[in-house]
Amino acid sequence: MYVNIESFPCVRLLNLSGEIGCSNPGHGLVIAPIVRFKNSDDQLAQPSAVLLPLDQMPAFFLRVSNDPELYHKVAGVLVESNGDKLLELSPDRKFPQEDFAPYSNVSHDWNPSGSGIMWNRYDFPVFLLSEESTQTLRKIADKNEKSSNGYQANVAEFDLVMQTTKAETNGSESCLKEQSCLPLGGQSVWASLPPMSNASAEHQKPIIMVVASQDSASFFRDRSLGADSPISGLIALLTAVDALSHLHDLGKLKKQLVFAAFDGEAWGYLGSRKFLQELDEGDDSVNGINSSMIEQVLEIGSVGKGISQGDTLFYAHASRNSSISKKILDGLQSGSDSLGSDNVKVKPAASSNPGVPPSSLMSFMRKNTSTSGVVLEDFDSQFSNRFYHSHLDSPANINSSSIAAAAALVARSLYILATGDMTVDLMTLNTIKVNVTLVEELIGCLLTCDPGLSCGIAKSFISPSNACPSHYVGVFQDSPSSTQFPSYADDTSRFIWNFLADRTSTLASNVSSCTVKCNNESEVCVGGEVEGGGRCVVSTTRYVPAYSTRLKFEDNAWHVLPANSSDPMGAADPVWTESYWNTISLRVYAVQSTTSDRLILLAGLAVTAASYLGVVVGRAYISKITKRD
Image 1 (cartoon, rainbow, N blue to C red):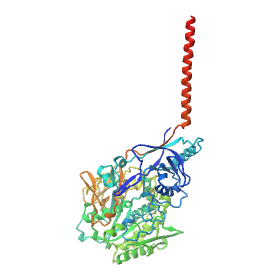
Image 2: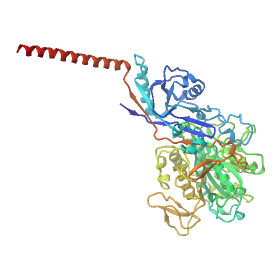
Image 3: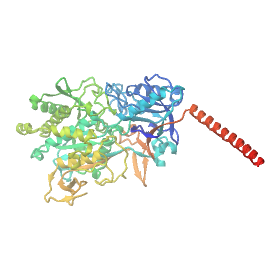
Image 4: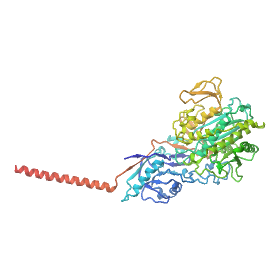
């Protein structure tokens, strides 16, 4: 009997220099007996499907990559899901995306838990099991282990055939040419508070950019939650926008606030780099702003683990020693002081750090070395998140109070920074309070399956394609254009767009319903997907495509461009793509042992012989009776 197994695959990704991730080695199914590994140094007697404890995962895959004999005996890997007692698991490198760092010292271990195993190529299928499937496979493996004749009667059948394997395209340039893959990418979102006109930039105020990432990564494609890194920062950004949206007369402040959620940051800072490119080219997606207007950048990084022994502490990582960077640090300190008894502290990061940690701010710094910015994090010299880019970076890995504290700190600090050289209105400052319930609701919406994107606030804006959120960037499915109505944007991007459009808006002069667009150019349609339609509001909220700046879509196909000197990060861009596939499945079933096969054969031969003998004896008897008659 066939049993379909609930599981999550590791898939094949490609770049300009080769492949990473997992795939069946050929064009067909892989079928192998299930063997349970208890230690990463166990041996295999024959090609097998390895049932692997989660705590053995890093050591096993590092060993496989360096042991050709073992590599060729691994038919597939089934990773158990039980990780409650694990203290750390990060398949990323110790310095994630080091090639994009705006400084030369890349030997610093920002991510001490990193094993780097997600960046290797494995020519065998790998699946993460659900908790229920883990129990099922353990029982099956135990049956195989107890088999008296040494024959494993239960096998796993893997269907993880990648189109790039079939087409024999082993790099992004060749697979895009043969159309066996698509580039990684999605849709970033930015919005201004308050809305700003599309008039000439000459009359615009200096901009304070507030940014966060909206995508994560993992060894397993569809288990990329990224609760602390980076979704805690995204939730803090959305909550800070909500808090500031209740203030009146924001338009009278000296600085313009612009909030951005970048997509594809885990794969070469796709969103932030494309945003900066669109600014340079003056595309419609960034109409109303340009790079010269950006005076300060404040990034909200991992802020879900800022509470330790009752104290709330965040670290400010500055881009460089400049008067403007010092203003941001001073603004954060003033914001901290204003919170008083809430006891939310902020400290400058250690001067011994090589520079800012892996972050979108790196894109701004590489584009313009004079960029002044700060990254707010819950760590100083090393990630406090021991599950960075792992499926275990889940809601259990964060503290909602820490995120709320970061949001409060950011909201008040932004108000102080936006006042410029004016005197801060302390009465207004003290009215800025975050909605703690909103933080908890956003955690439920963006990081759990129940309620997931079926939560009340999400369903008031969008009709989600899947209640269970995943923050893997996915592939870019649109043909790039200047339209603000992409035919494909994932659930998270659409939710962020609607949330920001709603919270940063002013009511339109003539309130009208809508489904896609509004008649007035300064208006957008919020909640247009939901039953009954949405409403038109005045808001400066835009989608910006997020894909490699080294790619161009022409003649219905993607083409890789040569590195451009005006794009300093382009030479380091791997140009990530994901292979097509037809189906992905995993199932197990029992097969007969050779002994059983032999017994059945012998029984069949015995029955045949007995039947033949019976016929001969019967004929002789009948013949004898006939002669007598």
